[in-house]
Image (cartoon, rainbow, N blue to C red; front, side, top):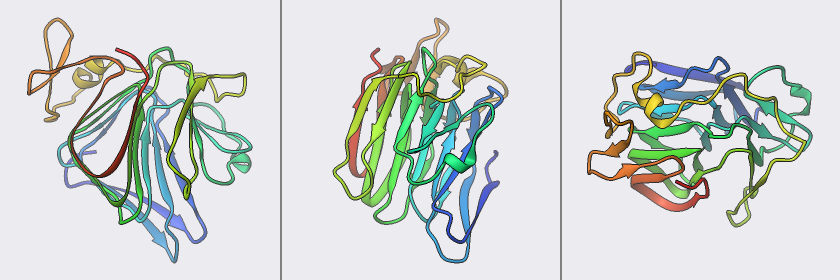
Length: 240
């Protein structure tokens, strides 16, 4: 999605969570506005799921009424079932509030933000992946920002709204979403693949290493974030 373009998610009355996924193995390149339009009353949360990787360009922004989560997980878990990134889903099981994220790949995909991602007052903003780099701005006035990196073959549980924020990371069990039919992109592949030509504040060196324009090297499993406006929870357990 280019600058000056808008990805519009339309929610009917009573919808609490909007789940969007990209299934083909290509990274999500977002350089415009993401908007949630509610047809009536309601404040649905938005979840964007792409295990291959996600880049928010310098023109990326949010216009949504509630919480926003971007993740490179393989699936998002509900009490009765999984919203899988690939394959078929039983949508009748996706009831309640999502509280867990499964990463079945050995090296989960990366998230890069160079834009201005902001949610409404009192809402949450979450970036959860194998590696997370934000050279742009993250804002959640009166709310919470969660940045978490997760090792492969892991399950992340997040506390429910209204309770103290906590992240619990544990090995995957037999209860998991559909397996991925592709390998997620590494951070260098994410930044150089396809027709990507965005200013991200990151440089891919000839030897394949990635560094910030400040000179710091970013490795798999790292968290790097610049401007953050609110309370923040950071969890880096992926190593690197």
